[in-house]
Length: 337
Ligand SMILES: Cc1cc2nc3c(=O)[nH]c(=O)nc-3n(C[C@H](O)[C@H](O)[C@H](O)COP(=O)(O)OP(=O)(O)OC[C@H]3O[C@@H](n4cnc5c(N)ncnc54)[C@H](O)[C@@H]3O)c2cc1C
Image (cartoon, rainbow, N blue to C red; front, side):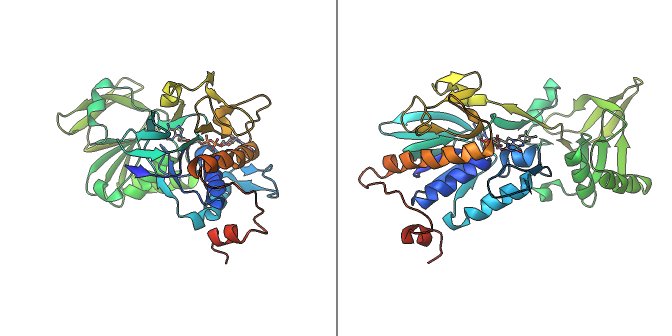
């Protein structure tokens, strides 16, 4: 079982800044996020929108903020574990054991929950019979493009993910793009590329229709889609890719015995510790009198929580407050000296 000074649950902006604050104090963190990349809401919900209230940054997009936060924590060589959801936390004497849905376990004196509004999860296809194919021939994200070579792929969705993957995979495989409306929401220039490929017979587009059934036992053989006029069409298919957007689920966090207020975790505003010693909650997921769900508030919460993380991880050392401008130790940790 891996040991670390702190496990951070959530790689949103606040989780990322927590890495920095722990790193300045010489603490190592492991960060776990259910998604396949860092950035949380900034990346998933508004990557291109400008943010105007990050101190000393007059304007930056969600994507730029994430990029800069990642740049700022580079010196700490932090281990990120993506595509895994933290399912369970349990006490082991003065430590906590953190377990993910892929059964990875970590031992740590400190857990920082920076889980925002909960884990982002793909909105799934509602057909019951399709569940058994999940992870084998039904995917809600593309992890390895090579596995999708020379296949018959049916892609569901009308947004950017569906269009981008239809275009990208059309070089490798036979693509059918299926959407329940005639209009697509994705970027017009991607759509016009796809229409061009459709005219050349390289991509097939089916609209307005929805998945009706899936045929196959061990693997998918074909699917049937039903058009709005009632007509049903069978499409030979090896792989289904479905991109119906993300839903946010508080998920397992609600079962960890923490004091909750609706979907947020109650903390004190001195060190942002929860009712469990060594479990801290920061960012959108925490709640205390006067809480503002802003990125800058999360940054402040990360700074204060990291001090108590230090005290728990290094009980024999005295915590010393230091400025980054003046501390040689901090500058060394940042690789500046
Ligand atoms: C459209 C929009 C515009 C906004 N504009 C601004 C603005 O201008 N200024 C501003 O300050 N704020 C703005 N916000 C709010 C800001 O985005 C949030 O305050 C911020 O993202 C909170 O950061 P966070 O790190 O706490 O959580 P999040 O960004 O929500 O990240 C949480 C991460 O935790 C992960 N996670 C949760 N549970 C688990 C689990 N059990 N296991 C593994 N991973 C888990 C999630 O997958 C997610 O990636 C805006 C929000 C939206 C939606």
